[in-house]
Image (cartoon, rainbow, N blue to C red; front, top):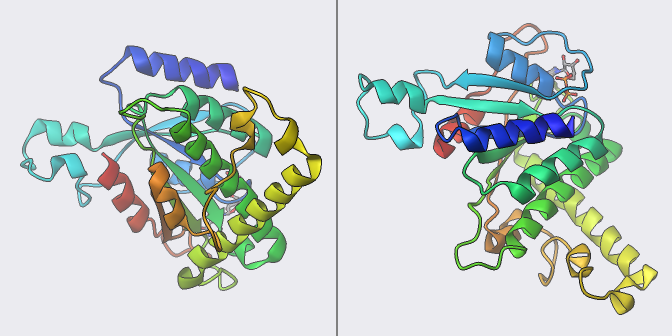
Length: 268
Ligand code: GDP
């Protein structure tokens, strides 16, 4: 999958006028494929496990105005173009996804990649195991972005890549209420932070690390006291927004993805 992603990336660099891209990530079963399908075909379809990245070219609904078009007339032909973007689904197991994500965030100057959409299952988040898995995944994504920021010591760092945490499956009555999603996530990320920090100490890496291993030892929101909060990442230029929604209703009700669209529009 990686060569294809890289190819997509290189291709994008050669075509400066191609559409802004958002990367879809998140634990398996969260609803990424369903979201992609919904947005590209108008209705979610039964998903199958594939191993090639899927990209969909999408257009924001007329009712959502991209930030760059706020002062543009609706009749302006460029307004239509400004509504277009690409959503890239990186398939495969967790590890592969991390790998793909890491290659993108490391090399991307930020121009092409406009944001990361982290999809999670709000019902799974209500259970300890689900919360742990989601927290670990989100932690790793955020740490990658933080390292990308740290690694760039130039005066003008790489363009920030904002993160939308799309809490999906809000239609299920087992879903964690919207008001608790952010708190629960921060707690889950905190758990990972603690475990990783302890593991590093126990391994003695701190004492023996030489040059080059510096980066490996960087922990998420290092240097901050207290429980982890997304706010701690603002110094690293990482903006996290949590918004609930559902790709499909449990009882055949329509999708509720308005807030996610709104976030995408803000980045365009
Ligand atoms: P992926 O592994 O992240 O690509 O997840 P999928 O898109 O394959 O979705 C996993 C399962 O969750 C599928 O059975 C979907 O039908 C279901 N699903 C996705 N979105 C929703 C939603 O908003 N509500 C409910 N109730 N189920 C959903």
